[in-house]
Image (tube, rainbow, N blue to C red; front, side, top):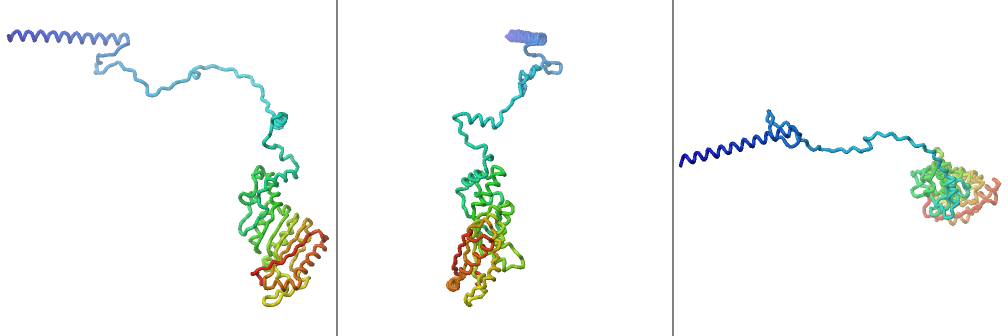
Length: 336
């Protein structure tokens, strides 16, 4: 029995070795066929232990080249006729000929007369205030004057800004309330920068004459000098301290009017009398409550009226200027 089992084992081993050899033979044959005809995979190994056949790998990035870049075709340039664009006037003329054309702007605004353009500026400034209060230490901008003052029309061009600013100055009353040079300098600088003295029509200021006489060592521009530069001034309003109409008596001394010749010398209103365009002059004489009745009884307003009337008559403008004098009583007054 033992012999039979050994024989059977040997036979099985021989059969398996034969089949294994036959399989190796098939692999070698397939490898040779793949190398010869260029298909399939290589199963045999190279002498170094690695396959000599390289398997192609998929590229990481694929760039697609357009077809037209591969073709080199020369195109003959086409002959183009010179394009003639119509002028702006031709377009407007052709559009005006159409019946349904309704323009939303007027392209010939600057071709209108200056009087009509100024009416347009007045219409654009209809909602603006006609009063401007000059403040101390606050410069007036020659470009915008103040925020939300000039309409947008004035910023379209330099010419429109210049014309619109001139119209704004003519329709505005400049008011300087306090007797201080710090209130006058901003207005003088602004009018000098924009050449606006000739456009001022209405002016109102306090008793700047008192400040000028009090500080004669450092001469400043007083109220009458400012009014004299405004050659187109039509309405002038200013306050006057009754102190300059008296003999400089202090309380509790009674009010005593100064001679007419002395008052004329103090007021120095000769430049105002020479304003050819002036039509209205209003002077408010400020008197303290304690001396108002006495000043009125002595005829202080009457004397001032005579002085101003004689001044306009001497300048050849008698009866052309409306003169108004009012007495304003106040509780406190500087100089009393």
